[in-house]
View (cartoon, rainbow, N blue to C red):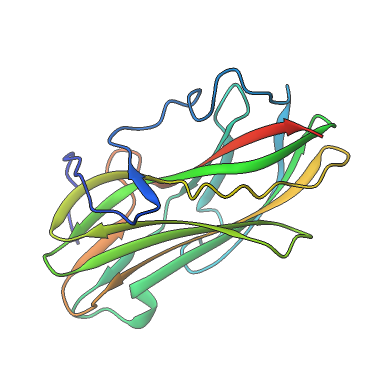
Length: 213
């Protein structure tokens, strides 16, 4: 077991990701003057995956401007090394979010920010990827970050691929599917990607943008 520290590290990242050294301001995820509905609710959540046992995922709107949703996972641990198995080396959590909002709007994901803890020795790499789509649309968009050893501490990294996938115009509802997965390689050395020491959660913040139909 590794003891998380309060050290915030600057990790190497994929070309699509940019580092975010501190927790994100809940009202600063998108342009403050952007068009957005007055109401946004998550009215239903279903979860499936090795990284989110029943009762360990919490989803909520965290921005007063309705421009961010937090997915908090309290039992998400990826680890490698002696006495681990293939099932420990990669974890995922697929969430289906039923959203309700004011009619006359479309939404799109703008970026994702992943916050957690990593212990990676030299020569070991970790990756996390969020794949997002809307039910009824066969297109998807992926957001990826990379963590390169050696590192030991908290991380907060964002990815923004500049690809907009919009929900359909309609009666103010959408089903947003988010599959978040993390893995470590190679697997011989002891390494860990897990919940943050302060919040006891691995958090994926999904920033939203809106436009009128």
